Image 1 (cartoon, rainbow, N blue to C red):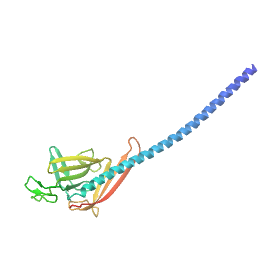
Image 2 (image 1 turned 180 degrees about the vertical axis):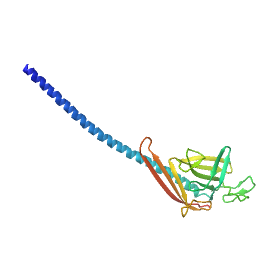
Image 3 (image 1 turned 90 degrees about the vertical axis):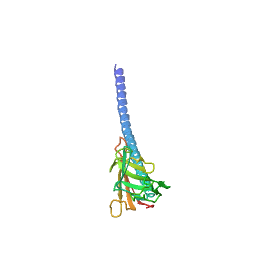
Image 4 (image 1 turned 90 degrees about the horizontal axis):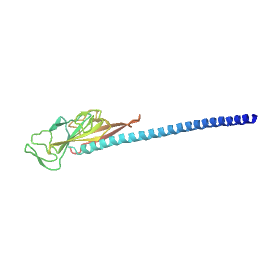
Length: 226
């Protein structure tokens, strides 16, 4: 009987030691798993931050490059002009947040008033030059919208082909939250402006993550064909 009790106590002690060892193993696994999860989460946050920063920078750079390309071909800036085709109307303005320009066409064209124009000719009435197209860049709340705002998040390129009498709206980039244009002295450009500074701000946040990034791209622009 004594031997049985001794064996039982021995087995109970072994079970107790096994339970303690199991708890220690679980504790070690918990600490290790927590450390690994924390490291993995940090790695993902670094990746998300780098990804949104890249996308924001890419959107801002694409926007600036596209605007600069058109502006360097522009004959002049325009303001106070509007184009209506069917039910679609686009306003062509030059301000601190919107830039509009007249782009030259490549060949001569006879207009409705009977005048023949070339890349650098005004029409016979002396109104705003009738070039191949008018182009405007502005921020809007939705993709391909014809209604400008000042906060985006879409940068829109509106183009009116005066010969074909068509309006084309295209989204240049998303996540664009600011467009600022200024000439020397910090004032807004006008139709007489030839050189000015363009600043585009892009901001993006990773979907479902508290990770955001902002990029500001600035470029100096000179109209070459004015």
